[in-house]
Amino acid sequence: MELPGLKAILIGGASGFAKATAERIAAGGGSIAILDREASAGAEVAAELGGSWHPCDVLDFEGIEVVIDEAVAALGGLDVAVNTAGGGKAGRTLGKSGPFSLDDFRAVIDLNLIGTFNTNRLCAAHMAKNEPNEDEERGVLINTASIAAFEGQIGQVAYTASKAGVAGMTLTMARDLGIIGIRVNTIAPSLFATGLTAGVTEDRAHNLTKDNAFPKRLGRPDEYGRLAVAIIENPMLNGDTIRLDAGQRFAPK
Ligand SMILES: NC(=O)c1ccc[n+]([C@@H]2O[C@H](COP(=O)([O-])OP(=O)(O)OC[C@H]3O[C@@H](n4cnc5c(N)ncnc54)[C@H](O)[C@@H]3O)[C@@H](O)[C@H]2O)c1
Image (cartoon, rainbow, N blue to C red; front, side, top):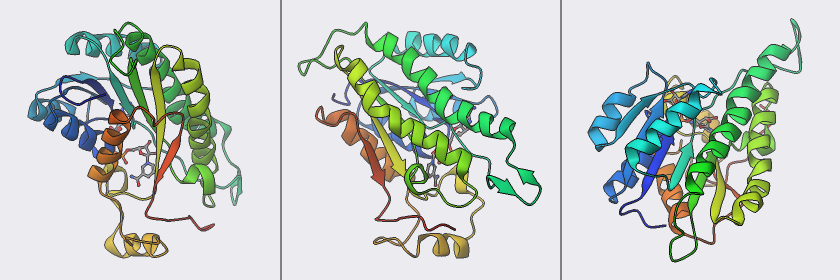
């Protein structure tokens, strides 16, 4: 799919990865709708990029359907959905204060895995209404995992399980949706300088990236945006989880 005229929703679009992707799409001539939490900078980002703003919470599994419908109506259709809303809750399977809380485990699965699947299925229903383009495509879904999906560190058990689920469903969903020309890909980043990691000091950032092959630094949100655009533009990229990690492999801690 080409950027000029593209209609995209960015879930988590007020900050970091999804904001950088929105910037690239808008600069390339596409239209964007920013979906993010009420308290985020979504209104400002949408205004800056000439897009629409739709406060939401992906954990409101029913309410998000209405918000996605509104965003698609504002765009006049839907070609691309990027989802970065997510996060974690640290803790060992068995810690000093006892076993990891099941409620916390479920909350992380709800946010990262169920939230992603829910928005994907709802966005796919909108994309299915598109006329296919010359490559027979009707849409592209881009999700966000983490390299912790593959080598989670100590204390990341819930996060790893949720992100491994996102990576794991990518090929199956691409196969499910292939018949209607919707591609599905997941980006698995290492450590990036986004809102999520804003509290990481320079020393800690150096320590966390010193084992990267190259470059030995935190990633920049625009490097995610560039990969997202490459996925959008290249019809042969499908069903895959692409690591974006400067050759980093997480050690146990
Ligand atoms: N930054 C990193 O180092 C890193 C590395 C690997 C994976 N990730 C993944 O990237 C995603 C975070 O993106 P980011 O790094 O750009 O962070 P970010 O905080 O800059 O942006 C994430 C956006 O998602 C929104 N969001 C969070 N929960 C939401 C909810 N329930 N409903 C609606 N919006 C919600 C936030 O308000 C925020 O604007 C997460 O899925 C995280 O697991 C981040």
